[in-house]
Length: 284
Image (cartoon, rainbow, N blue to C red; front, side):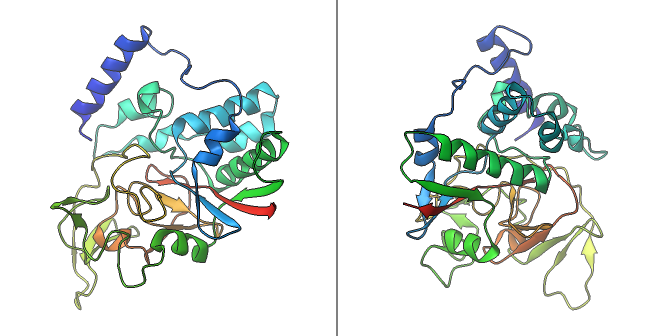
C-alpha cells in the first residue's frame, strides 16, 4: 500500500465516521461466540486453526475488555508499540497514529505486540469461550501453535509445494501473497545485516535496498489454502509457541522467506509480526 493510498483511506474514514478519532463502534460490546467459531477451520478432530491472523479490531476488543474489568497489569503486557512504525528510510508517521487505533484499519492484522501479549490474548480467549453458555465444545484451549501444527495447517495434505498454492509465488500471473516482491524465490533477507542476498550464492554477497515496502493487507486477502486459512504465507510473520520464532514470513520478507518451510526469528515486537490463534479441543 502506498502512503497516498493510506491518506485516502484515512480521509474517507474521517468523512464516514464524522469525527477526527471516533471510538470503534463497528463491533458489539459483547463476546460473540458464534463469530469465533466461524473463524476456525478444522485441522484434525481435536485441533482447529484461525482462518485469519488476529485483526486490530479483535485485539482492541480484547484490550477494551481488560480495561472494563480493571486488568491493569494485563494491559501493560498487551500494549501495542506503535512507535515501531517509525523508520528512517520511510515516512511512516501516519501509521504510528492510525494503524492500530483508526477504524480504517479494523481488518488489518495487529502487529507491534510481544510474544507475552499474544499468549495473554489466547488465555483471554480461552476463558471467554469456556464461559459462554452457547459454546459448541465443552472445554477448549486457545493457544499459539507448535511449529509442526502450523506446518500441517499451512500445508494441508500437500507435501511437495513450497507455498500453499503451488511451487511459485505467482498465481494466475499475480502475486499470491503479500511479500517483498523481487521476482526470485531464492532471495532472502538477512535481518542481522539489513541486506538481501541470493540464498545459494557461494560468495555470500548481498546488495543493500531500502526496507521501505507496502504494508500489511487485510486479514482476508489473497487466496485461502485448502483448509480455508488466509495469509498463511506472507502479510505478517506468525508467532508460534516457541518464543522468538515465526512461521510464514511477512510483508517485509522476500520469496525464500515466505515459503511454508521458512522459519523466522525475532527479539522484540515489529511491524511485520503478528499471530494466528489455534484451538485445541479438550472436552467435546
